[in-house]
Image (cartoon, rainbow, N blue to C red; front, side, top):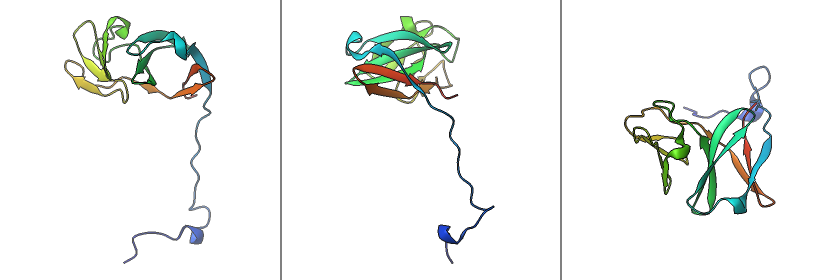
Length: 125
């Protein structure tokens, strides 16, 4: 039994191509403005997010807790863990995953590009 297909033998309309939305990377702050272990709030096209600097990498996450909508900017960044200041829900800034109650839903994460000394972030359109 053959478990794979010969892609060269597949002809339209059976072969379809994925279409990806337009991605625009926008500079939001200079890399040097954010020290290791710090985070900074930014707004990009009406979306509030936090830029976090951990172990030489930059991450962009939603700025509100998925549990109660509390702003995370007043929270604590401990390694890759971001803790909400209201009920102490925590999230992994690399994936947005909830790491503990009371939050059970993840927070959004956004693509980051480091270029020309600046942190660039994208929101899919």
